[in-house]
Image (cartoon, rainbow, N blue to C red; front, top):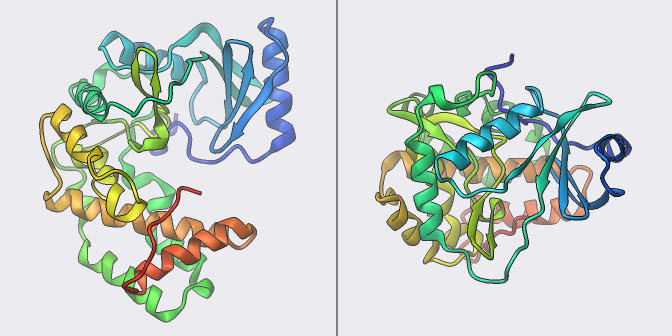
Amino acid sequence: MPVDRPFVDRAMTEVESADRSAALAADSWGLTTPVLIRRGMNALYACGDVVLRVGHTTAPARLGHQLVDVMLSRGVPTAPPISGLAGEFDEVSVTAWKRVPVTDSAVDWTAIGVAVRLVHDLEPCEVPDGYPVPSPTAFPWWNFGSLLGDVADLLDEPARRGIEDTLRRHDGWQRAIGEDRVVCHGDVHPGNVLMSPEGPLLLDWDLLCTANRAWDHAMLTSYAERWGGNPAVYPAFADGYGTNLADDPLTVALADLRNVAATLMRVRAGRSNDAARAEADRRLRYWRGCRDAPTWTAQ
């Protein structure tokens, strides 16, 4: 089992393969014809009141259900799996989940802070045997040397200098991230939270890892300044969590480095995608030090 890789670390880009695997799973499980909801790292399909999640996993699909069963047993609010409906179809992992209705209410970020604290309070031995919990230093999009090499021809000198200065300023994060490690969700951001009629749900456990608790705080601390989010989000989250890490040096470093990774990934995607290229250009203005640099979008 690849313990040095997260549960999902490459996107489900093969459209026909995803469609075929979803159809095979639905037929095998007696579900209605899958209808595409969206594509991302995984492809999501609706089969009536069931959602199929289709993607490349580094461990058996059933372990995704088992992990969420643990989270639910500990009071972590998340989307419930449909027991027994998980497997591999044409070498692609497919899992079935209850389709949760979404409200237009504002997310209760205090409750999400409570939920993340419950995750951090887990003992590593409570994670199902075989479910990968690597260090986030193994995430390929945090290999900054490789990313910079991939996009070297696409970066102008001022942007490159701004990015490299940030990397130098936070040199040593790999060592610090391993201190006082806890089980982390791995990808806490607004796109992985939804508001159901019963309250907020924390979704997407693909990047479960063991790291300093700062890892799960970092994105939200820069959400308002860099991503144009509501500035009340992180204080509410920290209140629920019980600790505010906005001024913690490691949290600050990880927030900056996450923004570097997010920029370089958009730059790389921009080679073949016009929308990604436009967003990359927006982000690079910040690294050039432009005073009027716009906030970023999640596009």
